[in-house]
Length: 434
Image (cartoon, rainbow, N blue to C red; front, side, top):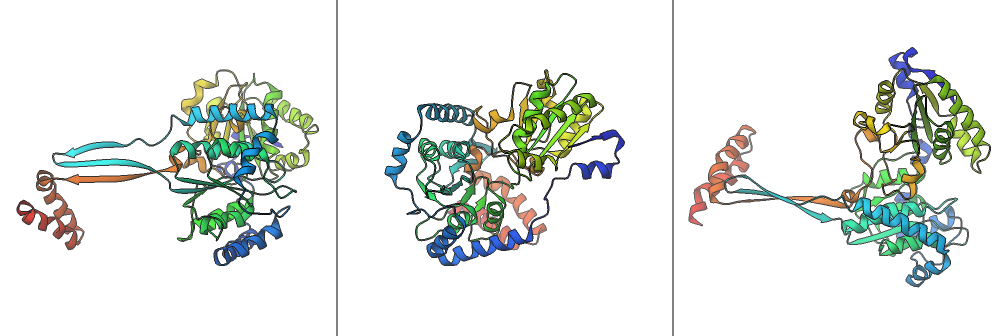
């Protein structure tokens, strides 16, 4: 992890320094993913089972998890695990309960009434990665807002473990969220199955959840297909930006950098400090803590993609962060709350030295499904609104048509759309007679 003096760099060098690793798509991954997606779109269950046997750790007995197994999951986990899951569920629900689109009605002029009505999505698919560890937290982050939005049908897919089963902690969390059906499948084939539907797996309207490069590619492919399903947001490897000053606890900042670095070799961590001395101490502490991690090799690879930047002032540090647009932004110093108004681009912000990124990942209440790769400049983190849609409504009476009609006719004729104008003219002419 190399340190750079921001003020000594040219604008081109600064931009290059903030570039993410692996921004260009891997052609091999795209091609392989498209082949999987296309095969399942055409072949349904038969192709899905072939993919499961080829790519999963073990082959499940059935795709759909029996309800009795879901109910028994509670007995298969410890009371401590249950309490932790419930605590996280309650906090996530409390935070997200303040979200959601609100309907409204407004009279834009006499006789013209416009409304916005709110509807939940009909069918959604939630993807929960399995891999080396069950992502219980992701189950809650996806399931709770879907539950609060009132989604009609909610389906979950997660890859099987070495025994061909989904971890009982995921099943327990999914049951808390009222998820309708759970399917034992992962990877690009799971995304394709939910996007297009098979004989066993229902077709959904929108797919949510993180995943590896193949899952991300599959979500993008099906979202571009009119027969597929929408996606939640662009996604990539996890990332964090930690901002430090002269008084930042070195151990805290180092632990935050490593908590993201251990996610993925392609993850990126960015340290911005107003003190070069503190920056050097944090880097040294990061190396010390790295040796104690079980995923040290993963974190070490991520640190190779990472940099430390020394800024002249806190205002400069925040400007650099806004330019980067991090997924997670940690203000690891006292008095950080005074700088919130200066932050324009971030997926989620963690204020003060006692607020680790891990809190947002698990149980503080905010959502950990966040925009990466700088997409926080245009996208928000996952919310109840993502599981809803709004529909506009308008209603016009004779008074409204008389007042508004001439303007509509003028604008339609200016655009050369005579039929549009005629739809108003005929109503003005015959309206009083109906």
